[in-house]
Image 1 (cartoon, rainbow, N blue to C red):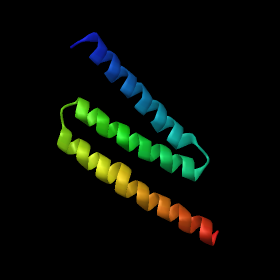
Image 2 (cartoon, one colour):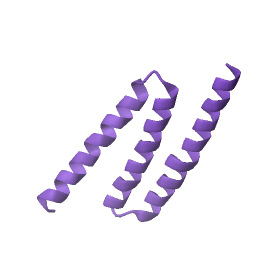
Image 3 (cartoon, helix red, strand yellow):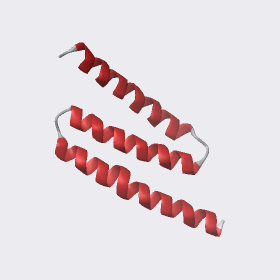
Length: 82
């Protein structure tokens, strides 16, 4: 494995860990949802780096896309009725 490839993988893992922790500790629900969606997209990139494009597509579609849209819709309802 080349050094540049290893550095990219380590950087991606560090960013994923940082976003995961930040999304768990943020008090604002909207920011947590946006961070969750970013995490899903970066996780899809990690799956591509691991050589699993089918899982990457599922992660991008379900993890970041569908779940993110449902969570944003839910937070809209919470703000409307709260």
